[in-house]
Length: 229
Image 1 (spheres, one colour):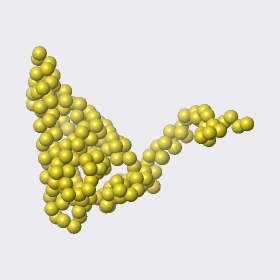
Image 2 (cartoon, rainbow, N blue to C red; image 1 turned 45 degrees about the horizontal axis):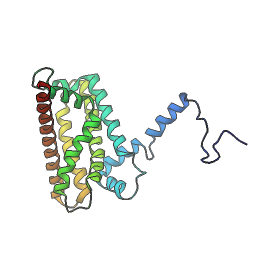
Image 3 (cartoon, helix red, strand yellow; image 1 turned 120 degrees about the horizontal axis):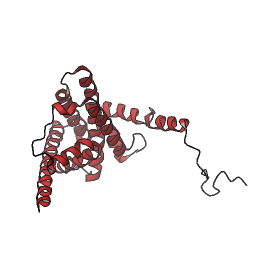
Image 4 (spheres, helix red, strand yellow; image 1 turned 90 degrees about the vertical axis):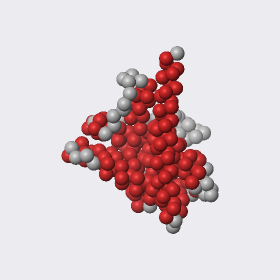
């Protein structure tokens, strides 16, 4: 009897020891072009709306998992930002040192992966309102946003590297490109033939960012009240 494999599931009873070959295989598995993150990036650059629509309704094996995608790209930006200190010249939080609002904002800047998913929830709320006649539920729209916001973090990462190396202020340009990409990708997802789709996508993004910011301020104020009592 071969005791190396389980007779029921045919899996290795004892997995192989983790070594350099295992690590290289895992990296290759994540980055390989076919159905890997590079393939996903290419598809989201060429035809984002149709590819995400296909992922939601037909084939979920062609692109990487959306939550993993946004966490990886957000982590990439976070590491680049910490290395070059990009946001120090753009983002200044007014308020007393040690206030709860500062604490929340520091958490957001240190955990962009989770923060983008939370922010995506606010944007999804507005998209659901503006595109209510389309048969997509809240969570399907959130998956759309995981892909699109993940691509935005990747764009910011590229511009952050160039800004860090050249010292030219490029993040404003990145923000404009990001807004254009968001409107194009989301508008294409719902109805690429209607100009109003792209406009509603942009308005949803702006309103989502505003309500996300207001929620942070309200949460900070409530936490300050709790801490004072």
